[in-house]
Image 1: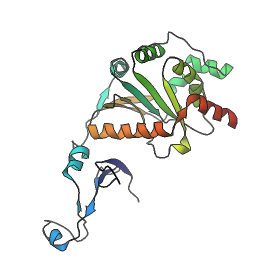
Image 2: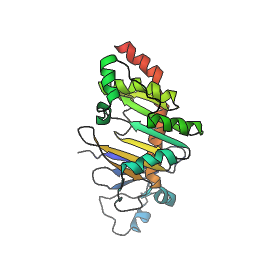
Image 3: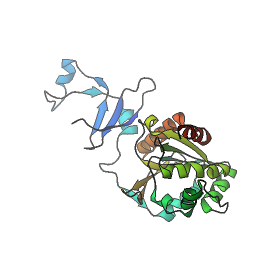
Image 4: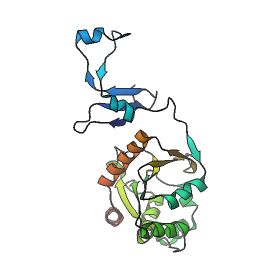
Length: 248
């Protein structure tokens, strides 16, 4: 059975080698580098088995990208602590959404209005919208990319309509068709100031289970790379809405 490898990082500026990958199943670190093949070099390696291979990598690769702990200790925070991050970030707050729906949206009275009328109402005093305006008026950036199915689920159509209100208060909402997001992880997260990640975990009923804060530099950079890739391929909300309308 093939390994499930996740790219960890590289110090290369050109062709991506050397690099580290992590085996998602075993936790093993896969080192990619220049093979050592000279018999005299190999003879100096202790405990080198006949079925093993040796590679050479810069020390900086392991220092910058190697795991700092044998096992990462989860930093699970409550929702009040999580909400404060949206008031205390300094520059940027950005989210990736990958699920087909969220229980919190289905429980929202605005969702029932959308089902009945096809349009979501907007309460300008809603705390999320008020905070978006406060932060963006201060020169900060709030944004997200949503991965949507084709055709979109009812929940995704609700969020697509409600994104009009997010945008009106300063949030940059963009979209990706799921088939165009094949290289992105199936994870939901917020990244704040490119230094802190809040990983959101959900159960099979789309209820939020817990929120883990991640500050390990190599992991944060990995999520920043996901953000950059998503933003590169995503399109603005209005353009995506027009594409959805064409498919109906």
